[in-house]
Image (cartoon, rainbow, N blue to C red; front, side, top):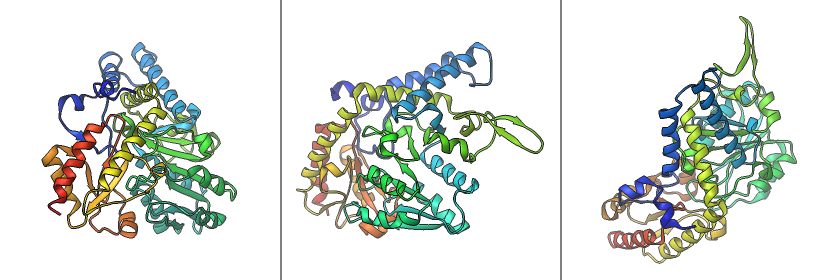
Length: 403
């Protein structure tokens, strides 16, 4: 892959001199995605599945093609992919559905971990708080690595295991296939939060063995406002959807309602049509580059940046020491500086964009990293370069003199 050629596809990189190291928050969008979304608004703007006129037929066809592209990207059937607003909404819908459908009830146990983003923690915590569901939280070591024996013990009486695939704070990779195998041995359902894994590695939900998988398009070069919820077909047919409304029913009486087929059953109301079309285009773009190529390039870049950061005085880096166990999410702190001050200096000195704070994972920071103010976080993607890394390291060395 030619990174210099790739960078020309991204207007933000062409129109600014920003060094964008905030990809765990959201990624930049290539022209191919922007053009596809604009084409919808300019040439065939209409609602889908609600009209027999030409524009509606074109929009419906483009939407379904993109829907199928998303399914193939995760190695799922199209009827197993449901479009939401983001990963957060996907997980909230799943939590409500499991409770409303009677799968989870008072006294049942959910297993999760200390690494979770708030989006994969708060919905389950609410079930505990309001409805008496038990919540067991598995704790990793300081690098974010789990002892699988802890899952073996916890899964014995669990109804659901819900875990993050890649930590948005530590970059640590959770062995989801092994955990799914353990959970299935005890007949527990498994949900994987794939928001931080889907952009950086090949995802095969069948190989992983999960029942549910969630992610967001804006994390992998797609538009904001598009979430993806994978659900095994038999569960999608069995469970009650969390949202009801137009487009999901075949018949409504004064006393009852009857659902249509999947995936429409889970996509109430008018969807973000342009966003889905843009997501399909983002996936085509990534597939053209090759997810393996992206993963290998990012691993090389991550290895380089961490090795150089390790030589900077007063700098603490968190997460796995073994590069094979992590992605390009790199949290760090200077010992005597607030992370917001460090992020501000990176921005002001060299126009480097990073994130600072708790990264929507407060329990992780307070119980594992034990830094009350959070961390600075640099997060890489395939359009970042070795030259940008050099500027980042040089700027950190300047900041180190102030710490």
